Amino acid sequence: MNYQETTEWMFNQLPMYQLQGASAYKEDLTNIKILTKHLGNPQNKLRCIHVAGTNGKGSTSHMLSSVLQEAGYKVGLYTSPHLKDFRERIKINGQEISEEFVIEFVAKHKSFFEDNDMSFFEMTVGLAFDYFATEKTDIAIIEVGLGGRLDATNIIMPLVSVITNIGLDHTQFLGNTLEAIAGEKAGIIKPNVPVVIGEYTDETKPVFLAKAKENAPIYWASDLIDQIYLSDLIGDYQFHNKKTVQQTISILNNETDFKISTEQLKEGLLHVVKNTGLQGRWQQLGENPKIICDTAHNKHGLTVVMNQLKNEKYEKLHIVFGVVNDKDLDSILPLFPKEAQYYFCHPNSSRALPAETLKNEAEKFNLIGEKYDSVEIAFAEAKKNASENDFIYVGGSTFVVAELPLN
Image (cartoon, rainbow, N blue to C red; front, side, top):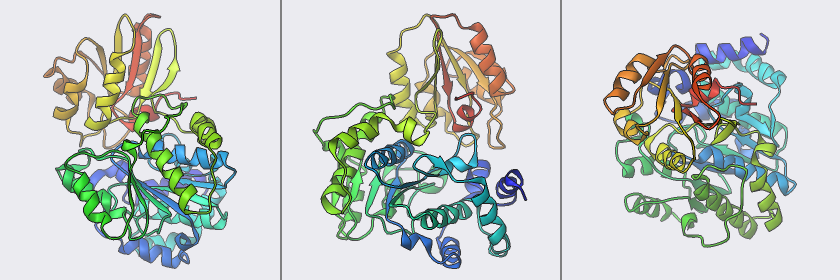
């Protein structure tokens, strides 16, 4: 199989949360342990930072990678989901894994995957661990896919664990309270491994403290009063992510043999996009009219983004908006401004909510607009209708942002 055939086989033949939703979620770590044993336990050869959280874990992971790259280290970065190409999930110093490595890995282990009913995510985690071990990274940043306790990445023994924040998302299998979700995320906390908590609430702090009693030193990044450095990631929500990164780097400096200077920290935060290729976080795609896209897709993330949107200056606001079908619309639609012109769209995913359904639900909250069969058509219509002093926001789902011309 060539690269396209290989990735199509991975996407179509095996369970994958990005396409299927809850049916792809496995409730134990048996399969990933079987797979990594088959691969020679490459995860045991890695020095890692493990990153979980409802929102911000992707930005935080990329920031950490950028800072460590500026300090001269060979940095593996495993994140999900991808926007354009599967290989975005697995990078070393900002360079995506090669098509050849993906092809050879799948070809070598395809029969094992089939015989043991490996999920898409389990295969991908195994691939990342194998690649980073083969390439002998100095450190690998490993982002949790979903939850924490039962996530396939949760077989590593990291140098530091990071939990960015807790919000209500994926409640169908993580729980429908902040305490329950915090309990799942806290599953990455391990004995004698420092844990950084990016943000906490009255509901989540006791959960973290109880788990950290297993001899895990706990650090509250939001309590930092140190200087906050500038970043090329300019979304308001990056304020807390930058603090989380600062705290994590401080632990590496004080408790490991990694050495990162203040200047390297500053440069790393300032050049995240250049160093890692991260896209879709309050990313500007045009001016006159100003066009911003963002992957925020739940109440916790969209609250911050909509507040930032209120601070923008424009004559008219155009919002290109699409979601997946498991989204709690009653929690997110009230966050959106009523004075905007809406372009309800259907992203190219089997999990996408039909644009007509979204339009009808949005009308209940006085969000008025037209429906479009694709992101491309909706975005083109918004650009056609917008004057140079208007503002276009595109978001609601990673799938929506993925279909934009980002480069």
